[in-house]
Length: 314
Picture 1: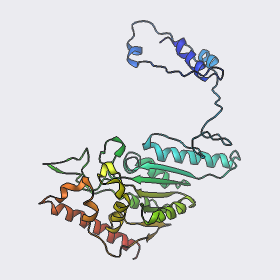
Picture 2 (picture 1 turned 60 degrees about the horizontal axis):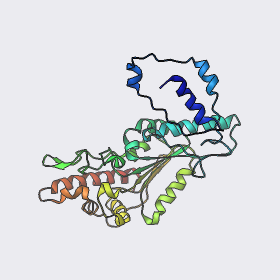
Picture 3 (picture 1 turned 30 degrees about the vertical axis):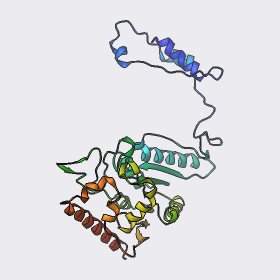
Picture 4 (picture 1 turned 180 degrees about the vertical axis):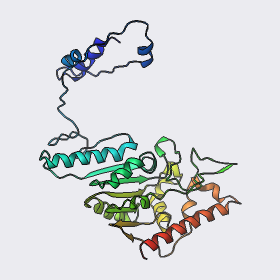
């Protein structure tokens, strides 16, 4: 494509009297291996012709945010969630200090367990350590569910995933899941909590409100069962959540300014089999000869539960 044509495309797409949809398709291989000469225009010529782009509507316009929601939002690569939100929050504080922003805003980030536990953990850790005034919400479904159910460090031991498939030589994922809630608590931020869909969502609502109205960094880890990845009957989602809590696989707790608080202690702690059995990703554990695998999971759940009770002086 001729350089002049490419430059014209910007004017055609951006000029308010035209604004036709434009797609510039340029093959890098053709550009670098073309036999014919390529004309490159000088920057000042291009800038003079194209001009400055001044959008009428944009996401962060202070008095008229342009979005489908009532609040402005940024949809970015999921591994960049922590870096993006902490950067926006820092910019907001700078603008507010200069008097350029009058209103008070709270910043909230949503990320899945893959982007939170794994490939986005570095930026998440940084924003927590710097104590940005924001809330990070992790919806934890225990795998990279959006890209065909690959294992993440949130995936439980012995779960069957597409990258830890069960077979004659494998019983599923070999490692225990990362306890990210406790990892974030080690950053000494004002508020950390773990919750899921139980008690008619009361626990989730209560902790969300605390997080939003906490000054400084707050983190919510929300277990969100995935029917496709966990392979359970979809209408049973609330039962699955309750079993996770009653077996102490997913305890409900919060850490407020370093104080550990257990929000729910089952009257009768159920065996981990009750949580595993309804899920197809663990069906191989209920074949003859696999009892030791379930026992290992139970031992880890018991260890983590006792550790939590000790931290909370329960």
